[in-house]
Length: 432
Image (cartoon, rainbow, N blue to C red; front, side, top):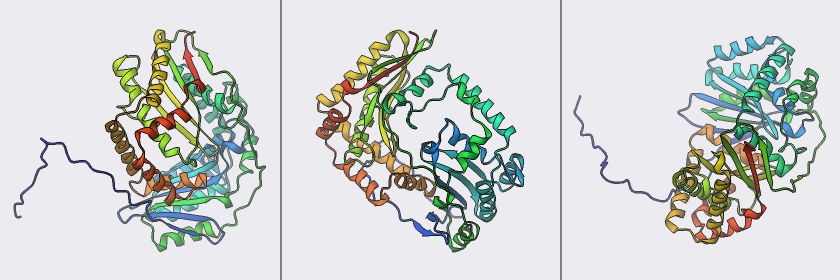
């Protein structure tokens, strides 16, 4: 064995930095199965594990009872004709795989991670789960009891009490984005409710996403197991919901004896399909989107009022909301609120330092590049654009272009337009 010279990095100097070179959204495969179901694939030579997502339109948007969509999704893996919950779990374990079924606002997603040589076997199991769920009542009762217990425990946290109420202020309590569960709701969901919801789903309208080592043989297996199935096309009413904003901007949820107060400050904002959305995300990051943010510097480092504070945008296909969230010392709640509004106003009224903007810009670009790291993460990026009916190539290119050309004046403008303190809800939870 020949001895090689090893060159160690010079750790006495900070590594050079430079602008991220974004080369556009990566190429991906796509096609349609014989029954019309579209599939999308991100191939990678070095991935022996495959990720498979079956995304079926639905979600809480089409439910008529709270928990209906979420519990139906979770119960689909608790039993099917010919297999019990234990047998399903045992089959997945035997394959050395992982599978899960979940619900969002607009879809039900069945996900699986499986080795390539077990792909066919996994598809056969998922087809059974998808087509022949039995929703056994014993497992339903156990699930609802566990959810109820979790709800009781969670109700002791002021942050949970605040989060449950916040979205209803913006969307209204009768809107799917604003629904909030009560303790009694955990006793009201019946087996027939799951059957009723399941019958609304239309698997033929699903999209299939693949990530990993994808070759012609893999697609042939997918065609054999899913392309030849005559999935039923169920119909459900196309529901529309109107936002019903709460007229009062100040709200409090009482929690006796709480030593901390949870604070949520925010409002409705523009959505992903808006021209200025990338700019708003950049301003949100400056304000409270990373550890070195302005809110962290003021509320945590300077004032010592909290361990953490952050700002974020929760964007969904039918609406988006901005929020600043924190937990602070109870007797200094108002001080924290005043300081938060002061930082928002300062960001809109004072031109920020170019060095700070460049720092946050680089941080944001790094986040984008990390979200493209590997086929599994790329599936999530593509699914997001599909949920909004956007083109992935142009959408992500626009985000990068807008971030790179954003100026300090642009930040001040978007904060004035979208983050007006006079239009924000102030929600607290804690002692009276």
